[in-house]
Length: 247
Image: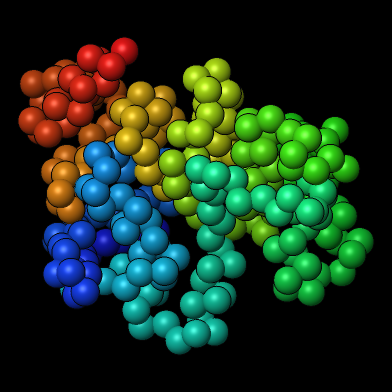
């Protein structure tokens, strides 16, 4: 579904090589996680999926379409199939929960009766329909992220990008949001691409995990493989060791 074909990215301003020769396919319906320390290239990689960054070399292909080959209108149509949630929620404080979730539908000019139906459906999926008339400042961090997820799926996307979506949350709330993302993946069939710097987050939700180090994809593992440390790349073992020390 999502194919990185020998993708490299160099920022010419400071000659920074953010990604080098990434070759990977993310399957339809999969939860795929990218993990790595700060500066490993995670954010650059995920921004390439929705066309916010272009490859310096290679191709990013989604459903058979090369991103760099799309014109403006084609890119807009592609982005409608892609939802995104962020670390800081990105809610509009002056709008209620209903209005926040309705916003993407208002932009495309959907009829109000359809908007009401879709917003309530999305809020029900994330379990926060009782907060429909509240404002963001009345919500907890976990509730805000649930609203953000509802907004990201209201357009019925095929892909959901999660950029450090749980890093601002406490451990218990993190687990509830991860369970919600697993349910969204299973019930709606949405392909999820998650980036995180925490291996425990990745292994609790992802079918496969790509390990990035200094712009290179050094390992791709199924979560059950993490038990056998000898099978892993040294860089992956190092990440696991760091987390064990923190815990």
